[in-house]
Length: 251
Image 1: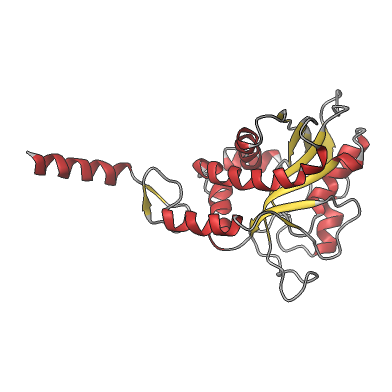
Image 2 (image 1 turned 135 degrees about the vertical axis):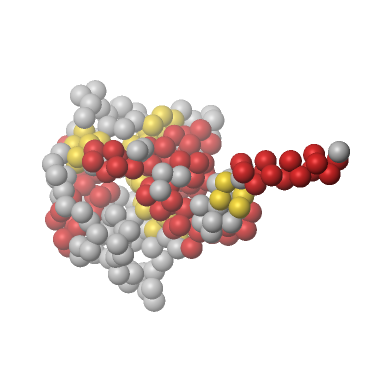
């Protein structure tokens, strides 16, 4: 009887097991296997680092990244965005919270914190079936310092149609997104809030610069805006060299 019970339990676990979003190994309850999670934790253990794009666009804010855009972090982000692995929002949101905490430090613990997700186009959101950045921001807001007021406020939207960023040069990306975002709420901004723009990753800095321009146009003081991303590309050779943008790079 015990043998049949053990076999039934094993069969149930096999049927219900999820696969790791990073390496496809069986993992229950998921979404990341212990090996990949250890690698992600090791990357995040060094703390948030500053992001320094090549030729940053005008208005690019102080930006912190929790990890490098390589290995399991890159694969987890792509699974979350392109394969609708929504459970990946939990580990990614915790990573984002590391960067947010560093980006929000100048505001002080008594200053309300507002996380503003970078939006995708309506068409991309429909295709994906969810809003990955907003989902990660909500997770991050729940794991940040409970003594500091924090809210996720999705006030940004695309002001016009923009081209797909894949394959564009740094200069083309910046031109493509210039004046590309707008603030959708009239009662913006909160006068005493520290605003942190949040996104999945940053390479050229064009998207974050466009977001800063939109917030400034709505009345937010630039000195009260920083940014936090889950990951940023690894620098090659020096702080001024970046990898060639790949087809999955969105910023």
